[in-house]
Image 1 (tube, rainbow, N blue to C red):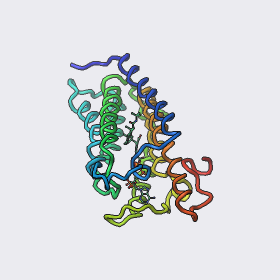
Image 2 (cartoon, rainbow, N blue to C red):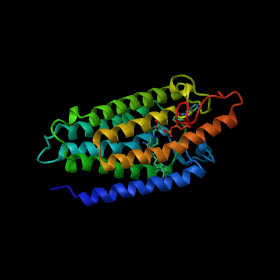
Image 3 (cartoon, helix red, strand yellow):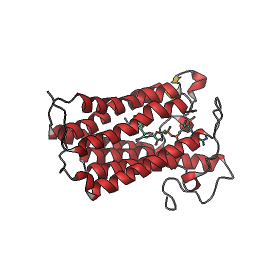
Image 4 (spheres, rainbow, N blue to C red):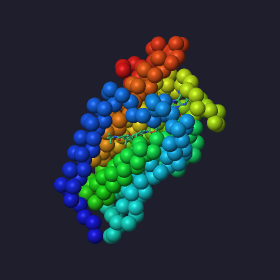
Length: 257
Ligand code: NDX
């Protein structure tokens, strides 16, 4: 049966950190080519998968892999409570991203090649986070009252709230079947162009603080390097496209950047 190999956790987390840096260097120059940054919209060329299927397939492993690791571990890990709670938080986010978000999205078709890499990434990260929490993590029995757990959990919930609310505001910009872009309004979009990304980043840093673990900090850093630059490219796109775009709005961090 499976057991904890600390060197495996270290290796996988380091690779995640290296991938993050690779993304940062790529995406500071040019955005990843999906959504509003696709060079040749694939609807015309018929090469994308409908957004609904693409997001469902891509994100599913991030829910399934840790959920299975949690459910199938034998003997079941009952102590400490912290490990299971934290694993459930991760699965909760990806339950939303897999089973709720895709069914409401009005996004354009998603490029197949990115779908392939996105799926690989979600298997990799789902395994790393789940494996670490279920097989390796050690917490004192009172971890649930530790300031890191409570403050991290609070940030996680706050970020998730902002992320889900902002996803909803973006969706409401379109009627079913529409594919045009409009100026997002309301919620945190009042302050930043990438409100959904800001929420997601806060969420994963909260998770990292609550788990106080290398894999989770590596993933939070990856998220920052992946969607941070994307918020900046969205912001530039809006400034270029809409002459009446709100002047005081920032790219990612309210009032700062
Ligand atoms: N999926 C995370 N890298 C990614 C898929 C792509 O969950 O090879 C990372 C995720 C993957 C990426 C994933 C990892 C890195 C990959 C990359 C592909 C290449 C890259 C694998 C897995 C890679 C290396 C080199 C390292 C191997 O038509 P549309 O689609 O634009 O419509 C949009 C609509 N909308 C508007 N509608 C009207 N008017 C406007 N002005 C609008 N603006 C937007 O709203 C969409 O339907 C919707 C949202 O659009 P957008 O662009 O704001 O968000 P999007 O980027 O699609 O993300 C959706 C949500 C969001 O909440 C975000 O926080 C979360 O997913 N997310 C996304 C990406 C990664 C991630 C979270 C994370 O890292 N945690």
